[in-house]
View (cartoon, rainbow, N blue to C red):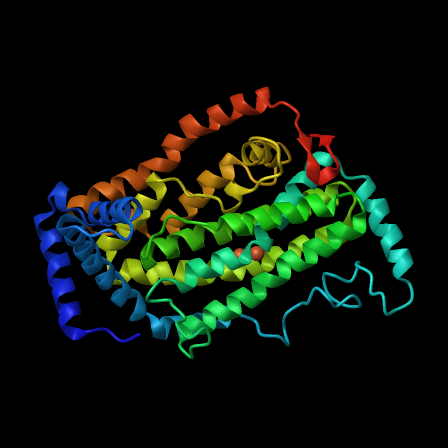
Length: 394
Ligand SMILES: [Fe+2]
Ligand SMILES: [Fe+2]
């Protein structure tokens, strides 16, 4: 992207001034937060105060987007984490690769494959199926995530098919991710256990409600968020595969292992990008990481609906119980990112110094508070009907 030199100089000077003064009222995260709230409450209205607030936020964002855009050489190098069509597994390949256990209706033997799939799936408890369906619905809401990636100035893909490294990543990443929902949906429909109409309605409503990862227009927060999410999905699919194997379903195990492998490459890309941001602008990177952790990383499936109350709350407890994604995983991801980005050893001052302290204390704090709270909730978990499984109580 092209930056207006004068505006950029102004933005750089403004950001340096805030950081040098380091007063709490002019903390750059507060400026972004304030502008965000102004925009939410006063959309399409005009006032001097609002435009001053937006103007300040614009300078901070311009600075951060310029830093992110200047990483385009790094993005290019890291495009190696996309495999390309000749190396990638495909959901439709039923003779070779992770989807080989699924039927190909153009080839003999498909009845036998379906029979086997249904036999395996019969040995899997409903609670595990719920987790699998929730994971699949999350993957199917891909348009929501692509929107989040493309709306940020630095990573944006304005024409929809820009030639920039960021745009190449955005399209390549989307193409890879699209296979995850497809293969899981195929698997689920062949098992015959899920009510696919109810599942489709949940996918539909998740897309209908859109998704706000609470990163605003800030590329730093976007990279923290995506690093976190890719690692979370890697762990979740990996564990799903492991549990599927335990229940004696090798077909699902292969599929989940392959998806997890993709997530792992995506995680590596976003983590590398944020590492570069930490190298180029440790102060801003620290503040953005802190802010995202303070607002708690919002999960893409939080807005899932199935006609009964508290779907996500219950679903996430079931996922804990099945050992697919637990509060310990959440804490371990934060710990991992702190280590990967050398957060503890970065030399920062003022607000960023306080942010560093907060971030580094979080894993221990969560270990003491969140983990026991979750244990208590798990003991009290009550069964609830799931439309996804024809009203089964889980
Ligand atoms: Fe995925
Ligand atoms: Fe992913």
